[in-house]
Length: 163
Image (tube, rainbow, N blue to C red; front, side, top):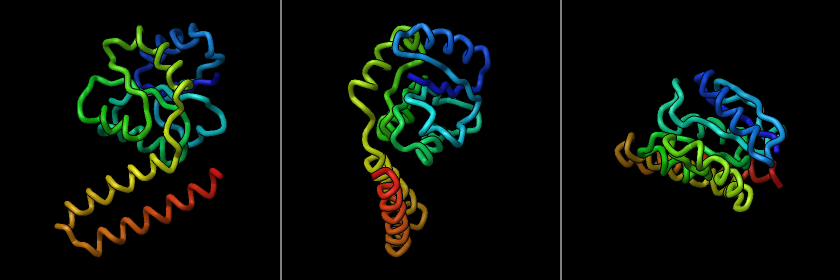
């Protein structure tokens, strides 16, 4: 199994890479300090910090899902609202305080129960985008419909690429 580790603190990345390499299905670990643009073809699993600098909440995971919607992802976090958003985006969520003991079982679970299909993750993104637009434009129905239509077009485009 090829693992991409996304962690912005080098010392933490080094420790986690060592731990990941000790888990039997893991063959290789590559480290990036930010979310890279190419993931889908090269990695079987992404393990990432949900609280990285430069991203708010699950922003790093949303960025990853834009170009790698179906890769299995495990995020580690301090907790909070971003946990449920990460789960909605198809990621397994592990708390930082139990990361060392829970990472191995989370990797096994990620492959026993694969992440939701790309279309499901994109549907969640579409719903959240429509909700955000609805709040920003004071329920402007035409604005909401436009965003929903654009999201549907994007989902259709992604579905065509993955099938």
